[in-house]
Length: 416
Image (cartoon, rainbow, N blue to C red; front, side, top):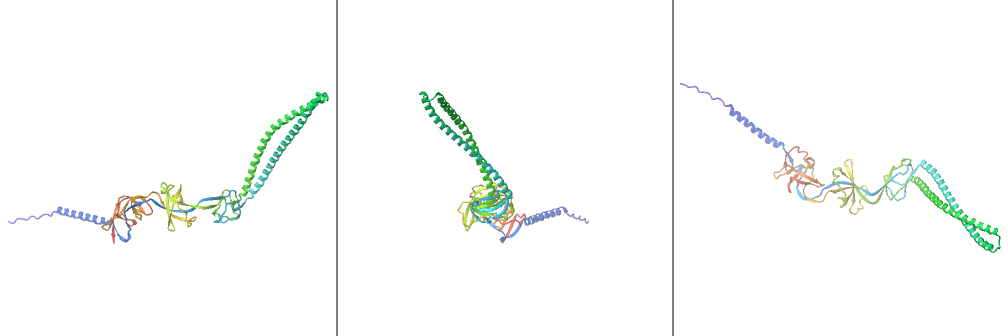
């Protein structure tokens, strides 16, 4: 008897498991391949700059641009306002001390000077006349004292003779008494005149001293008025080179207005603007250098002006070496300013990579012809090198050219 054969049922569960596993493997392969590809960037070797990490003497140096200026400059300002009458010197000319540079005219000042001068001169004359009168009075009194003293001595001799003659009964008593009275009168008059003259002399001396003080004060006032009038002619206080002296005949100048500058050419200094980032690190005494005619010259920071204007502050530097004749006022110098002493350090050459990474990571070249991204810590910089603080070893090579085209790549594939 035939037996029915039972048909086998298809087992979907194992197939579904195999399909799921295959999809997982494919997904893993996709992620590995494509993700690796996405984090890599192919670049030609000739487009890269590769440098080694080295060990050597590192010095924190910043580049600054300095301008040569005279050590001393005198600014010319108008002591008195007025109209430009004559220009007696040209801008850029070498002038002598006391040389007339500019003549101004001021009608109101001239009239005021004349009026005040007349008043002061009149007062001076009055005081001098008073002094003359006092001195004349003193002379008159002195003459009176001399006259009375002479009469007293004469009368004293006469009284002495009359006394002898009266005792000898040669003259009458009335004549003797007249002689005695005259003698006493002259004696009292002499005492009063001398006493009064002593008191008056003290008063006259005080008065003369006050007159002399007043005369001296008026003479100074008169000299000040003359000086104001003379200030209409602007003169050079020192010898040097005249700069910024640009004026036109007929221009009006106000009192205190800046007229120009005189540069004293007995030496030079260098002035430079420095980024405010270095304000706390630049100090007096730091040394810089620059190259001129194949000769490296040294400068020293002599003054730091801490006021920040437009993100910069100003410093002044003095020459430590003899100033070459090639140095000229207004010349620009490219200076390397050392902010620290030399010290042994790991370092890498400066490059465009720093602008992208900020010194937080670099591409390190491996023997396999690729460059891998690595976290590092970089420190100080100078014009040539950047200090390595952590993450790199001596002899390792890194890409120092710009990373701006590599996006988020973790690996550079270097094509030869």
